[in-house]
Length: 250
Ligand SMILES: [Zn+2]
Ligand SMILES: [Zn+2]
Image (cartoon, rainbow, N blue to C red; front, side):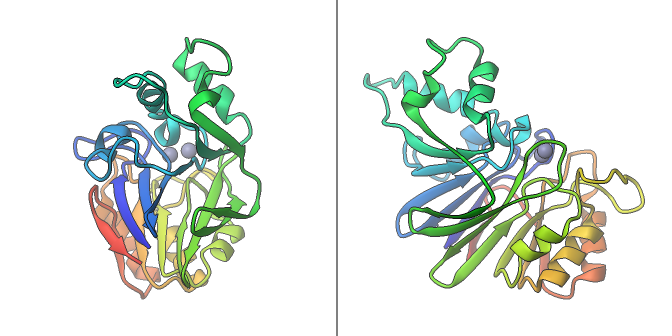
């Protein structure tokens, strides 16, 4: 499996990074996890506009899904005429309506579904292309999912947005790479069921026995080095910060 960080800024884009978006590839299949603000532009550095095979939206906060509106334009009004065939889009209940509302004037209420084949995510196991995928509901103010992607005996877990919760540890158990949000700073922000801080991300990785930790979703106003040091204080394995364009072979 190959993971490419398309964007990793939390809550809003930074000067250096788009919001959450991660490209996972195996056997020629491209699965995109989230498409936050600015991600559609960055994505084109890593693959063609029409090269995606499936999209998974962890939740419907704008920093995880809003560039789907631009992607609708690219697929619906193709410059070479024609219209793209629908690709699978996995998301929480109400994804199609949320994106249609955000777009504001789709030709009809069902236009999105002409280019996106929406699947409602529930906790459980799914087959997406060559990947075996497990989704679990995590702790966030809106319906939000963590996702574990497995292929050929290797595993990647992406936390999505979440506060500390036991199900996240379980989802990430023995993962080869744990891509975990750390939006808050330990000792500074403490709002339950919203985001993790660096220390909580590290503790979750330690409990899960994850082999590698990559911290992501750190907002521009937060010092990432502080969150990384907090994670390393409680997690003994290799830990680093996500960065746009970084590639991991898993
Ligand atoms: Zn977010
Ligand atoms: Zn969120």
